[in-house]
Length: 245
Image (tube, rainbow, N blue to C red; front, side, top):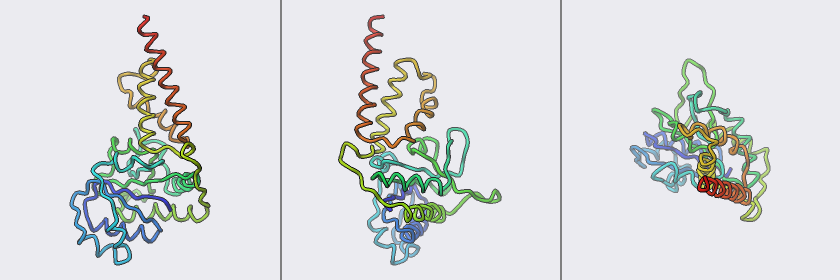
């Protein structure tokens, strides 16, 4: 499916083993673990079963979330909390359709699952382009980690079976990576502050609408270079005007 499951600071190795089994069930062959809290391969293997053992053994471990998501063109974070900064949240079915479309354009998709006890913080969800939540009964909203992974990947599996893969073109027409998108956000924010368009008291918050807008765009490298060039030119002219004053 060309989808990577990222487990951010998972607490229990047994849950990681169950996640590996769920990934194998749904045809997902890539797991990245970020800063695990009590990682023990021997405790994870029985839950993974012999079928998912190779997936556990090939699993990458990264030191932080920013490093783990850097190369993906689209990153989805999972959350049980809504409201505040967490807006425009998709259901797994809605997100799966978007992921399938992203893959049609040659994109690489990652889905981030937070720690079992607290989930992802606002700072961590800010590294994700979109958020998704699994609707549950109000009497019990929490899900086991492997249950959550299975539900989301099941929707991706269904969407992927009905959407043909269309490989991307040359380097200039590829979708930009998460790392490049973050550079664009940072450059745009700096430019908007320079021309007094962005409120300086809390620029990160007031940048959210711009981020949500750009995250809906399937930006390619040539378009990224165009926007970066515009930002640099606007900032240069604003700096010149400021010196003349």
